[in-house]
Image (cartoon, rainbow, N blue to C red; front, side, top):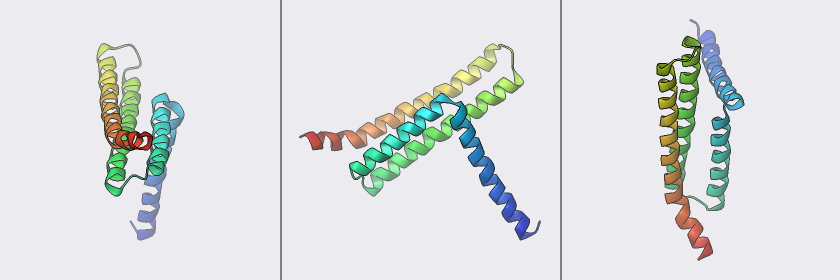
Length: 125
């Protein structure tokens, strides 16, 4: 493959990834919730003037949760495709995937409280 074809292939891979994210955002209620939460966290972080380490930790938490939601959506889509009828094992796979996202979201919320709560308390003290 020549360099021009390689470049086009790379650009297309980014395009398809963005289409996947957009599709997940359009179709998945929980992805919308995660994106709104992300925007609120960023606004609060700017207002509270997070330092570089705090921003790094918050960014990692955000990326983990949104990535997990994307994996969950992919797993649910594949399960629905291969098992369109009711199936206990298909349900179990989807529930476990959703459970993983829930655990990560709870963990990220705890991280957010650890970082934000002392700053918010300091404002009102």
